[in-house]
Image (cartoon, rainbow, N blue to C red; front, side, top):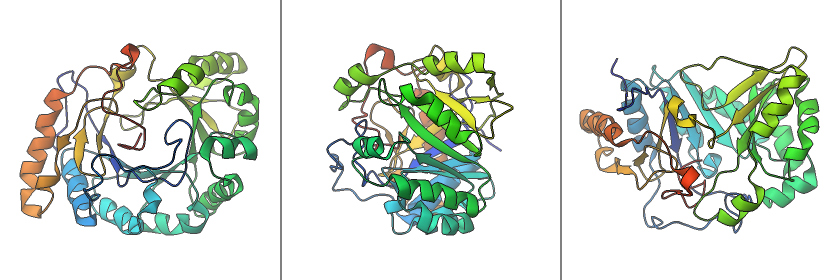
Length: 328
């Protein structure tokens, strides 16, 4: 099996595929003014066949895990078909989705039947009023019901993403811990990241995930080993809790040393980093199955351009205007 390896000997087993940049939430850290089409608005999102071809090409290059992202991926009317198309390649062992959860209660059983194996739900507050202030939507109870529905549908664990913000949710750690004590939820605190549109919020609300780590360790939480196709979270477990805590800290030293993931945007560009420059076009090779070898060559060749690290520490956010653009 060929492998995707860059110039720094990092191996890539994990693809994050955006299927739309449209979202129906207005989260303060991503789309505070709601969805607005980007400069590629005249270009349609990848079709079902194109999604099948690009994910199968990655699978033949050693990719084991695919995450469907957005925007909000479940806004695609063919979302169930997308799940089935990706899972149709036997090399793809894990197929995950990151969702805001608003359709979860209704649709999660169908997603699981189609082949979904893992689920991430965005929940930035456990207080319904604060949830609405952050997301612009009064959907807290609907999202919570969706998480319950996921367990009913057969998921043994659900990951919950919480964007860590100073004096917003960092002050409620004990409420989050109480929530996961009897629930098999991996609660992942994700450091707020600076984007082209979000500089002011970043300067006001950014706080290091290390502030959470320093509280966990004295309580008896222990860091766990990391699997080769896992995401970037540092995962902590405690013997008295069913749930886990994950910390995603992109500003931490050596964060990029363990990078194992690549990204493809909803319009078919390969992005080597969430905060890199404009992507490498793949779409011209997604029109027919016979272009598969050329597609694989372009993906592999593109890895030669991947830099050793992002430049977030220098305030350089690359081409990422907001986190819906290439799937966060």
